[in-house]
Image (cartoon, rainbow, N blue to C red; front, side, top):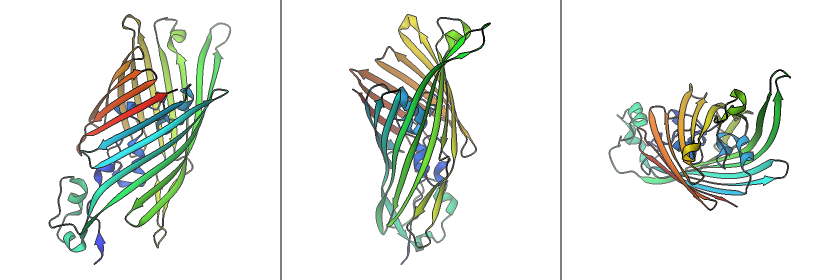
Length: 336
């Protein structure tokens, strides 16, 4: 008897866009890294570690030491696991390259006979994560989604002259791109595709702009994802193709030192244009270089996180709540 998968894994839509479960490549919308999730996904302007290969590839040129980072996420009350590992290597001339491997795994997906679909409601199966079909499943299987990325970024510094009556504005420009290979496995079928992302970041000193010594920095980021069009081609008889939608991430951030407390506060905002748009808000308070606390908000969901940094090693944690369940992420960063 022909089998049908009747459990729709609605939990696998984005931790950055909760409406993402309907389209190909949405596992890439979950986002990489831990710090970013703790700030509600407002990271396009701040991206300055290995996870920048997702948020804004231009940001990896801010990494001035070799860095290895890894992350493990328990998605939606253990329904799925999400892992990634990155390596970034600075090169001469303010150039940095990076490699990233990301995997999403969904285990123990039940398969029911077609007869169990009779009399059931499609909308309820798709939208109610607690919905259970009657009977015993005929079997189970697992699915995996893999993402491989190679990134390149260049840092440029220059002073923008406003004329002899005014002053020069110091600007740091970061430009980068990544090439990615996507591989998906569902039951006996495989799909694959390639894509390109391009991003840039701009940073300036607010104390120079406003002639106020205690002010911090302003960051602006823009990331164009899948700019050349990305299709996932399946090895089915019909040679079916799924389209990965083009997305633009726009972000701004203000970093303000608090000298009396040896600390810094960062306020960040991102806007994603895909899926009718989504807003992301984040805040971070850090003490020296020893640790940080974070909070964020997106799509009516609250997030939080924390970091501890000692001797070039950083441990990050983040949590996000949503209607499907709690997501926990833990990460490790090593600079050498």
